[in-house]
Length: 282
Ligand code: PAF
Image (cartoon, rainbow, N blue to C red; front, side):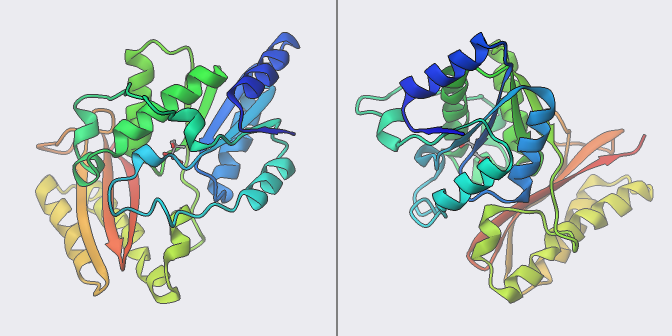
């Protein structure tokens, strides 16, 4: 497995693989790899001959007071997990090589990056789309895999790829959950055992929304209220939002439609967690 933080070296490795006839796939990550990331690697492997994982805790997607400095960085364990999963190359650059002095070009999806997560975390999506565009430019993959757990992120990346005619197939892979329903996240490790239990309120609230809409509830606002009521019934929980939206545009809905997505973001203690669930009435 090739491991480098140098742009020149990773380009060389990818170019040699391409010359051998390999299709290049990329799994962008911020490290702290868990089974969710491994499922992305596995899915990518099914579609290409050469799987490249990027590990980079991207500073531009963290706002002031967020967990950039505490974000877990277990590089040795991550490399071992990649090796074990049959990854061909890991690109793990330093901040200065991707954001050198004088850096001032940003990629931003206009409207969708300002709602929901974007409203709560104003610089977040500009940082995400910029780094993903840069990684695509460096690696030039034909396939890139992202998790459905970061629902708005994958929707924005698909929009960016469409709008900027990037020649990459964005594959969105299902959220991996613990047996009790908690969506896997690198941030789960911040939770105390009690908070870990409380955090089940996210998947429970999503289930309530699903049941209500499947059961014929026509009032979207009432379903959103029901989710919030459930979240607010826990002491240590402070929701940012719990909403039902159009699954592509993430715009508000006046009434149920055949395909929807329920999205939640909430603090459990000091840890901000997100989760979502597609709801189909077809
Ligand atoms: O989902 C993540 O881990 C990050 O937001 C990503 C896509 C790797 C960009 O830094």
